[in-house]
Length: 142
Image (cartoon, rainbow, N blue to C red; front, side):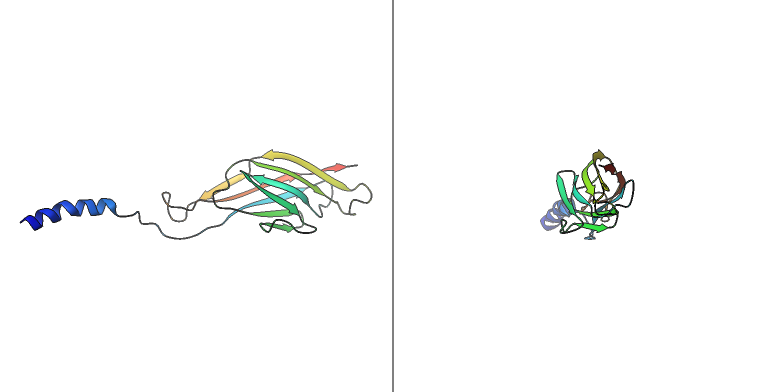
């Protein structure tokens, strides 16, 4: 009888202590930027800041490894926990003639991209991943 009473007291405690059932599906956070200018945008350089994380951009040489350059597009692989907020940017481009005849473009600013968040393991389980997209415009410089 005492054994049954003890079991009756322990079972509710065991079920209350079970860890939450979460899957272990991973996901990647990214921000895709389209860069426009008065002409063809070539050789982007500068920086893009998402949250507290700053990415160095140098498409003609060595960008941050988390930055993929593709012509007038940048894709930033965001670290875990980054995304969903404002983006600050300061970029320049050589333009189509390498900037030799004043064909350089530059700009800076801040904006909030169209963000989408996902939690592939459920709303109460991590990670939370972000996907964002936006465009910025560079202006001609003398």
